[in-house]
Image (cartoon, rainbow, N blue to C red):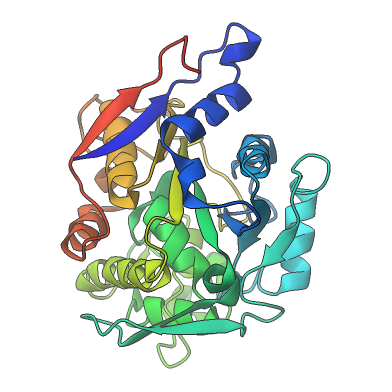
Length: 372
């Protein structure tokens, strides 16, 4: 059984403010044990798509950087470029987006390094020989760093049910080719009865593979790369997976990418997850919908499976907020993540546990008001 450390968001004095709690969690979870003096430490986060407003605030990542520096590590902030067109599909736009969202000196005392280079082509390839992937391809910075701290914003996701530590690590570090492999076979289809022909999906498609004919959207599967942008963009929920099994497959591929990235880095990776601004979709669309539950707190662990399971449990134990995309499962204990898009989000956790990446069984250790 793994330990997952938890801090709530209450603050009534300087020693209880959020930066102090983040540093206390860092120490309690032993995240400082993941790196040694002088090592390059990749702080994997998500800088937010331009237009999004609920991405992880840099003021919450700053204390993590400070703790790494205090321990003698050399931190840098990192993420890989996106598969879809947008504000983060190349390193120039990606860094500009990070800067506009506050990821710059002196807010965060670390540089931004895009993990897979200028165009998403700087990749490491690691052999895994698993169910879906023979090899995995991800940004070279993830392999070259001495240690990795995965700092995640927990939220819903149209394909995987939620985005947490595993998705941040596996999909997030994937190179352009890696992301394409993970999305492969996630073909969308259009429900013509629901479709209103608004064209939002047309504008969202990075491949120009969607068109509106006679008032209804149609998708050219020869061009489709399975990125899911049309699913997210559709305001009437008229676009979804052609084969529901593909949503299990993409979760398992993400886990296989985690397996490859973590290979050779045993004991060198730690996890912090912020269960705040739990929006129904990830931070990749250029907008942010209302959170589906009140802010919950912050988690830290050395186990990516346990921290994701704990975050999901805490969200599902919360009371759902009315007037959001969540229209059912509002009561504490009901599965809010599944209610959003009908995705079986447990697939990623089951497979990650099967591959030995961690344990779904955990002990939640709540930090008290006098935690040091």
